[in-house]
Amino acid sequence: MTFHDLRYIVVIAEENSITKAADKLYMTQPALSQYLKKVEKELGVLIFERTTTGVRPTAEGVQFLAFAKNVLHEEQDMRKQLQNLRGGDVGEVRLGFTGTQATYVLPHILPDFHLKYPGIEITLVEGSSNDIESKLLKHEVDIGFLHPPVLEPELEWFEFSRDEMVIIPREDSDYQRYVYWKDGKGPYLDMEFLRNEPLTLTYPDMRSRMICDQIFQKAGITPKVKLTTKRLNVLDAMAQVGFTSTIMPYKQLSAELKNHRRYYIDPKYSVPYSFVAAVRKNAYIPHVVQRLIEELHLKQYTF
Image 1 (cartoon, rainbow, N blue to C red):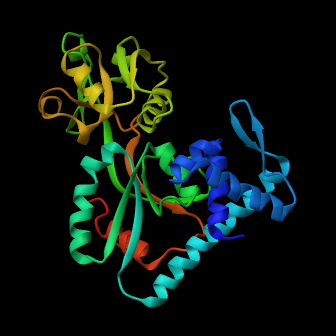
Image 2 (tube, rainbow, N blue to C red):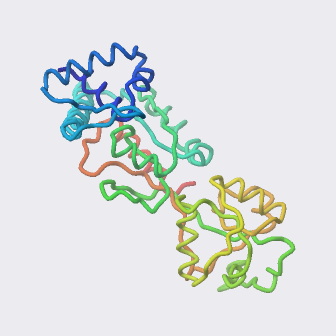
Image 3 (cartoon, one colour):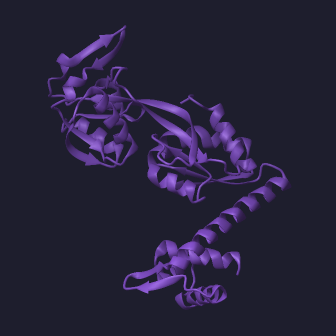
């Protein structure tokens, strides 16, 4: 039984299909089936049972898959440790990020990092914050850029950038009577404005929405949600045309809203919208990954 055999079995489990796994592995379905039969014969058990929709692990298969994944993770760490022993700032870092971070965070980090360490290759893996947490746990990325809250207890993280949520009211609403200044700072908008105001917000499982829900909870408000979206630029667009009011991160506002119609949230209700860098707890950190972590600490709170 080889590392290749273990990888093939894991991919079959991930795809729940021998045919789909074969496509992903650039193999023929009969060839992959032969690998599976070979491993099952060595073990003396069936790893998968056939269903009308594909395959699923047997009880024995579940145990074997846990073993296979652990071995493959150990192999990855072993290869990274061997690379460290060879020395030099040469290798690959797999960096997980969200689409927003591609335009907001990465340009502030990667060009300077490449100049310092031209031998370190950065491989970008895109997904939602939920996706990136999952990929960290599966050893598919080395560092993940996330928005808190960080949901997986097996991850550790540090904040490297912070934004604040602001309110963008509909232009034809009565928001003006809720505007105020506090300690010479502002303008703020009283949260009471949002109690009966139609809102466009992101989906409930998105981190930006989780932050908004924390703000609403602190203010004792149940939001009147008229529209939901998975993209912050849609919030911006809906606010620009006056369809609804919204709450979104200040640094990601369009120039139109940033210059004319954005209001801060009182500190007693405000919850920061942060970027954090996350890694697996107690995991082996290769030298090249540590280099990028050091760079993130150097640039902490600089953008």
